Length: 411
Image 1 (cartoon, rainbow, N blue to C red):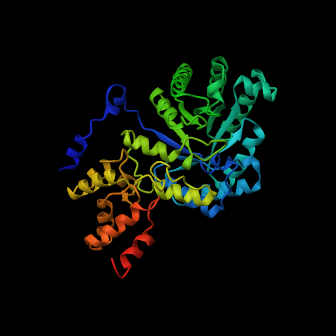
Image 2: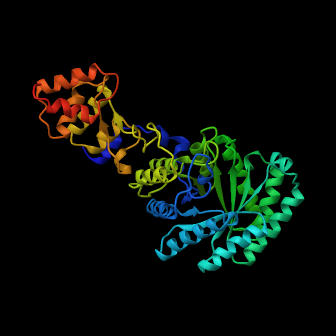
Image 3: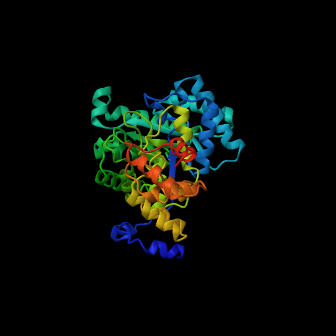
């Protein structure tokens, strides 16, 4: 059976009707080393670990990395400079950026690092835009416009590219959004970023807001691209990013494993997975698991067993019925068939593979498969012994337990 015919065995409802949408080139902005590190449950990894993560971002085809807040202190500046030097010394495709408040003094801190680097680092210039934020901070629109004009103009004058970011855009008044973005663009911002800072948005909200901002940008008659930055407080992060792209955003932000404040940011790894499966990107994602595992170890955040794709259980099965289907597919000599018969995500695409375990819900086929994979003859007495032991347990057997049964003198 050819690769094409395996795909013909699946009727894909996802590609019918509106699912036929194909966006122009999608870019990715990885916030792991800045917004991701604002999680209260992580540790700030040493620079060596940050560089490992940076290289894995490059391997995955990520376009930009937010690498810190230069105004937050000397350590942040040193890390930003070291990471940026790594990018340019190794002629990497990924580009660095830094978060700065819409304040001249924050831009000055970024200019200081850029001057030492000898190259400009993009400013992700953010300001609170929603009425609730304005009320809490004692801001008004005139003050926000003043901050915007001063900071954006100062950055552009000093040859610092600006992505202008409105925090909490998904709860902001459209008139305020229009005035802030229009002024920022007039002052030289080359991108604007729509933020779902507190994870308030639904996919419909994300779509509506991006469509609105697109019209605002078009009225300026400037070539300005639109980003979407979302959080996962309602677990709608990936769905919102999809809606944002469908509405006209060209770049989406995320972090490895969705780490970040509160419930975290949009999961960069799951964005890559879904966009790849949707046919929106062609990135090589064979190092996706390594990227997630490296970040997990570096920041001290374990990967849940049932986490999609890279979790321990993502491609493991213990059920006899499920295992039998995978085994039969393998026996047909079709790796792709075995990868898809009981999985909506092909493990091989991400450098992973299906695993069949033995436990209380397993069938004899699980035992035979496990033994054959280890070049152990599946003699009936041995198979029966392992099968009966598994049925008397209340969990999956470990490899060590099974090997003890294999090595026992009498079957």
